[in-house]
Image (cartoon, rainbow, N blue to C red; front, side, top):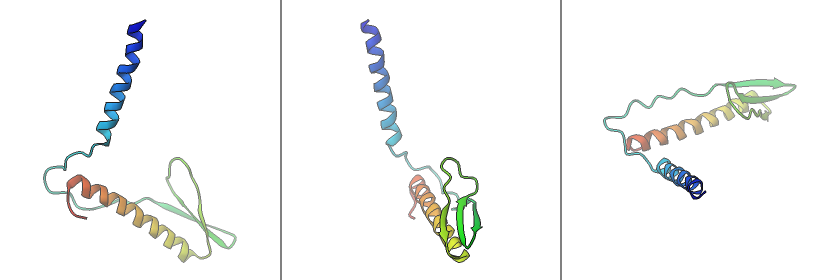
Length: 102
């Protein structure tokens, strides 16, 4: 009986250790960093009546249309803002991984 009670405690301790290790930042990778080259997400634009809507083309999970936008120019501007956010997040991760200035 006591042996079975000890096992869950050991599992919880291992899980806590694994979580702590996951939150630690890895040391920078050796050598020069590769080029900052990013393949970006694809978007689909749809016109419904007199408004425009935007969605990730191959998005997994929650698929929510963004919009409505009054003009095509505003819809493409929204996509540009999403691209800016995506590139910034990825570039910050790259900079931290290789310990190079942004």
